[in-house]
Length: 325
Image 1 (cartoon, helix red, strand yellow):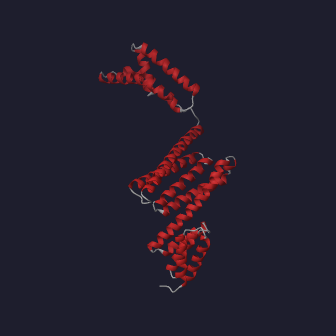
Image 2 (cartoon, rainbow, N blue to C red):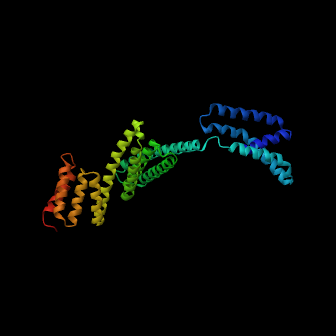
Image 3 (tube, rainbow, N blue to C red):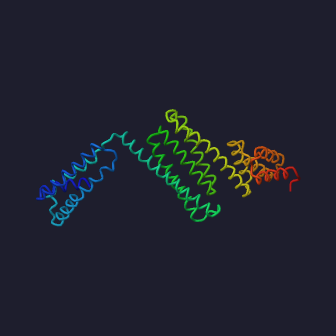
């Protein structure tokens, strides 16, 4: 817009429209000066485009008229003004490092907006699930898909931030949070292996953040990182337990055992991990190991465990102790 608009002011001055040029030019110069003096955001420049539209339209009108009359040579001076204006308005006002910092801020802000949207859509999902009694309908699935898309977008935007500023501690912690939320969405949809991949990436991001030492100067972000690490461990263990149960149901007992052993490594005190492992071992005919697993599950469950869960462990222990059918 600027090259055409400035060329239009030049044309207006030389083709008898000086009053119009003298009206627009000071307004445009004054607006630009006020932006230079009080610059806060790039969008402050946008009103200048409004003042450039009339002279830009004049340039296009004169250009089309000259093309019809095949007198383009008469516009050599105007073309020179437009070329100089194009160079002037595109000269970088920032160093390469400053531009990277600005780009980093833009991507970070975009990721924050995506995470806010994800939080809102996840609330919609929970409301739909409550309305349907835990049975996901089309509206619930749509809300979950939207949450998944927004968390993925936020994680990608934050990856761009970290490519520009690897030491940006808050961005790295926020990316870990986005990946953990993304994993939770995948786990809710039953895609446990994909969820585990997302949790593992989140764990790596936190490890890099903690190794950088950036949290020493940002105690609030460091506390968030510690809490997030605990949530990731819990979510990882639950996803592995669910994956193990899914594989048991599918009859893939060796891989189910592998998943449940990984769950026990992440959360040694998890009664469901031991209980599901007991079932997996029982179905493989390994009764002694199964008894030990069910006994450990009962021990870990404690008095506060749901009655149905305790009954499952006791029944498993009973089956593992009796003759194998």
